[in-house]
Image (cartoon, helix red, strand yellow):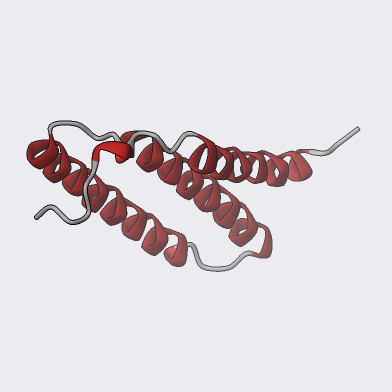
Length: 100
């Protein structure tokens, strides 16, 4: 039977894998891409917090990582709002790179 520590390591790995799979396969809309990136960041944060708790290290690095992930999410939402206002939707196939 698996102990709780191995489960606490496997679940974030599955989250990271599912986030990568979602980012690669469902990349038609920008919102889907941003959500899968945030899901990967959540998995990385959970894995890092678990590993830092196991070795008894400081947790300040995980708080710093969480702050950077929140800033990344805010920048992604800002880009999404700018794209929707300028192009009318968030579908990648409708973007024209030559258009200003």
